[in-house]
Amino acid sequence: MKKTLLLLSTLGLITATNCFAEPTSFSDEANVKKTANEKGKKAAEMPNVIISGTILLCADYTAPDVVYYDGENAMTQVKDVSLIQKTATERANKDTSMMRFGAGDTADLVFTVIGKTENNWVYGAKVDLLVMRGETGADKMYGFFERNNIGTLNFGNLRGPECSMLCGGQELIGGASGLNEILPENLDLATGVVGPVNVIGYSSRATKAIYYSPVIHGFQAGVSITPDTKHQGRNSKDWHTGNSGNGNDSGLFNATPTEAPSGRNNMVFALSHSAKLNDDWSTKFTGLYLMENTQPINVNTCINKDIAANGATPAGTALSKIPLRNASAYQMTGTISYRNWSLGCGYLNNGKSRLPKLSAYTNSDRQMIIPGGFITTKDGDAGQAWNVGLKCKLNEKWTVAGVYHNTSRKITATEKARGDIFTVTCDYLICSGLKVFLEIDQAITRSSDTACQLHNLFQTKKIAIRKQNSTLISVGAVINF
Image 1 (tube, rainbow, N blue to C red):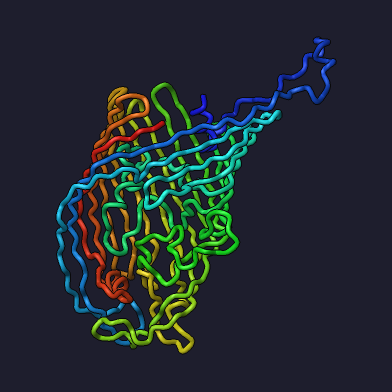
Image 2 (cartoon, helix red, strand yellow; image 1 turned 90 degrees about the vertical axis):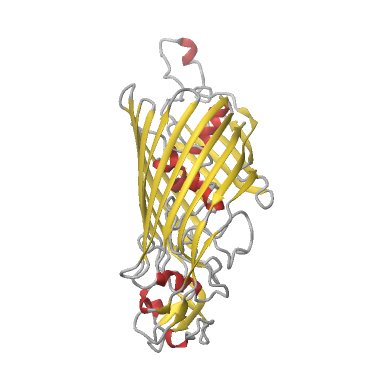
């Protein structure tokens, strides 16, 4: 019962069961004598503390095959930054395959406090502590208030509907959760390739308010607002200035930009529908839209003619305030289940979220400039992706699943950065709370010359990845308590 209540509080899946008092029967004299304050009132419950958590233990074998781009940046003053001239060279590097042991990459300890008022309001707070990821700290911390037929309000540092309401192919797999957890920590994708799971502007655990409606005829709405995507916790000053921030996909920007884009009044609107058609068939679909007011940032810029022919740091580098396009993205996911089989798919489109506006490519003298830190041109976009996944529960013990991700992003009018990522998982449930798994990930990604040159432009080390074809094998156990 406690686990069920915790799950409902976390996801906001509120049933439509009527918890109000039964109507008074006027033929019952005892009921007539009850006062209005006594009707429908139940004793308040003292808060309970529930301790739960997850521990991941695994051994990872990686076989990375990477081709780096060593081309120099030779440029004359041109009318379009996409016309970068180059002397391209590529350096293949098949890193030594190796075995690594991991413990605690996704380990967390969750404290949940749940109470109930005399008016049937459920209230509480949740603190999720990460363990052994660099250093121990609070991953999520938020309060919640809910009541049947009214919904749930969450407030604090937690992920929003753009994460919790997804139901595509990625959500079907087991193992170590592939792209959501283990693969990004072990393999690097080619330069300019965007992530295929979350929309640009994804606010992660920045401080926000979320409302989940009750489920009515299978429909549920989710709405969140994040005042500042750089802000997490209670602090008097913005101490995140210059950090990567939330929603900044590594495919759009260099790893260490002078200042990272961020959003004000980041809002997500989501709607899902679940249906059980009969004993064999069920469906779930979710659509969401994200919007924000993306803030201008100060970054290094340079005029085309100032780029040295030998690829050195441009002599004309100057710090300039660059106006950015507002994040505006949408995502659709769905799952159809038949008995022990589930088929899921998803699609996201980032438009031109958080990329420089056209006016950012010229200065006051109408000279063509390049905003540093951005792996894009004025003809580029923020990418799109789709996935399809399949899961089969063979019996009470064995579950197998697989998902394919496709990602594509325009760098120039004619060049793209692409990715094909495969994940296969096999899970065996030993007993309640303990499973062992096998996960195999294969990532094949390809960049473009212009994307690599823009990445290397302000970097001392020319380490842009032109091509990548890598394998990750993970064997381990997950303990839930």
